[in-house]
Image 1: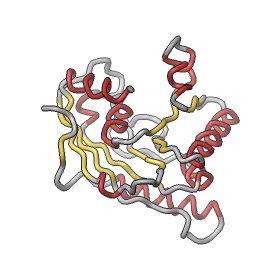
Image 2: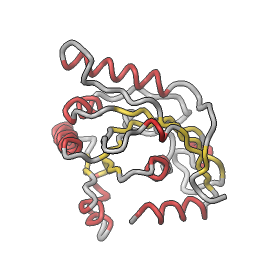
Image 3: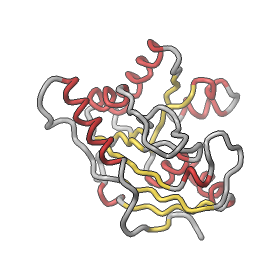
Length: 207
């Protein structure tokens, strides 16, 4: 129900999406999507660009807001408290369980927004989630969201945001102990998210 509202809100703000790579996703397969993170608009942009019924982690404080909190719980979003390590680990486990139930999930592996657009160090938790959830990881490269809304800004500026859905990475065939497999996936995601977006794009919001 939220997707049409997101679509209209971005269009009214003058944000236009160009999306490539949806054909890489298989029907009937759920995924853990890992986008780079530069802006507050990244979350709605990714949810709209994927065209799937995906869930996300959200700050625990959002769940205390009347109506919004109830809506997030009903949608199976997972609250996370980054300052509390044990609570954060529990949240990762909860998200992994959602993956095992067949839900799509989006997590920003950098953990916070990049100030200069450069990819930050990727946290370990999302890759633990991928192995525990037993699903392919899909890197998603976002370009242009920082120009639309920089970190610290409260205003969304008109502009184009490019979203590229990259080749899924299946952790299952990777050999070695679990920690080594997590590092292999993390390195593949880091390498995939580094280059700039190229290739043809299709507009998914009205011009």
